[in-house]
Image (cartoon, rainbow, N blue to C red; front, side):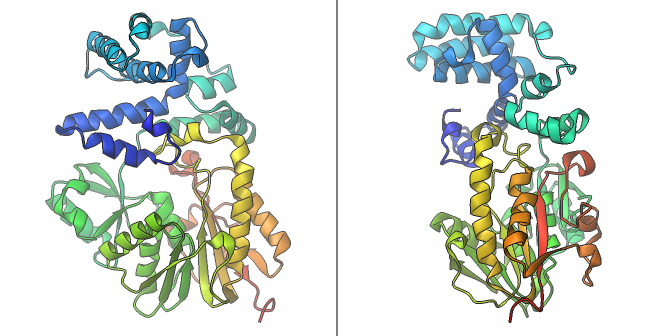
Length: 440
């Protein structure tokens, strides 16, 4: 848990490092479940720990608090390990980590929680903000925003969605196979799937683990969230176009657009950090997207190109607040003040990308954020400063998008899947068209 708090390490990497230390697959699965579950329910766990310990949560030693959270999660949400063993293990770990003076309090708090697990003091739904923030374990600032903007019923659906375990979603790599053929290959390998509801190439894994089969190294699929697949499809890349993926790593959307382009198109994939570029190159090699040209470029500082691209995708770095179901640690890493900081950089990147769109071309902006500051407000600010562009509703375009994409458009033509309407992460994307008369 302490490693998860490191802002320079992502959750998936941290969990994988810990899993490598375990030899039993069941223990690996349990370790991941405890970590994710503790992060998912952290606010509710803190509320119970503070109640049982008769002190403010800030008064606990950070290491002892993490130990209490992990143990309380097991007591309240799991039944694989007996309660007595959970408590005893916590006391032993407390002593082993040099916190022997706190072992008595750890023992007392966890036993109190275990005894009273059916009668814990939690806010009721009538206390709407407390219920969303504490009982449903979301940052109070975010719960307050959603409550004001969405209303209680929709906000409740969003937080419940975030507290569910996300299924593994695959995208069939059309450079090598089709969705139906991949489904048959996976079934032969003991993995059952069902077609995604909206993404044309998506498969939801319902049984087995495709990542442990020989198919995992075949390049026939990419593990990619359904909303992410919709963003790449929303870009509307067509055969023969010249395309720039300006923030390309880790390469899921890049390889998806490469399949749409076919052999006659040109696709440039850019990123700035060396590690991200290596990850991008690895994805493109695995998927067979050989015609993609990788460049190192910081979009926030400008690009080395002229206005030559039919389509530019800016999948901008953002708060990640739409990914809380898969990345519950993001809830506790972000603050409301971060939104303005992200928006400034996003606006700068969007303006830089606009300079390389050819006359009549399109600029696609996307985030994995739910918040207006990073989405429609960035678009509004950009349009006010760049009159050569206008917001395009794909429903009015000659080039039809896949039905699943069209089903997730909002009233303005922006891509906006939501937990309560579509059962998907709340990504955002907008298409901006460069007016043919605006620039030569």
